Image (tube, rainbow, N blue to C red; front, side):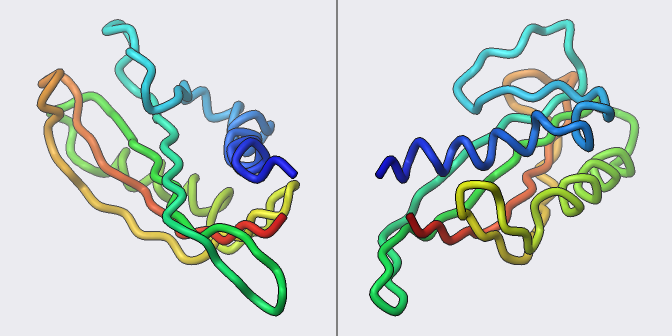
Length: 131
């Protein structure tokens, strides 16, 4: 049983589907340094929070956080459009290895501290994973 590896494979697998790749939005892991020439992208962050037990099954609860970056000084509409795209892929779905997601939320964070040319929002969805 490889619950952590299966969990990340489930989430990363969503960003390899045609439904996502046709958007043309670059996708990176959260610990990746993105080249400064890219001005619209997302970063995947997976936060396992703790064990979950349900009718003799053992698993994990956690949060998937998708950090959404767009060009600054263009308003928040594009952030919201990307959040809608993410909802279609990640909200209330069952993924290949058994990860089940719940309702999403989106938080506008504003201008990025590390790169003021970027504007950021965080899309979050809770998950349960039973192996």
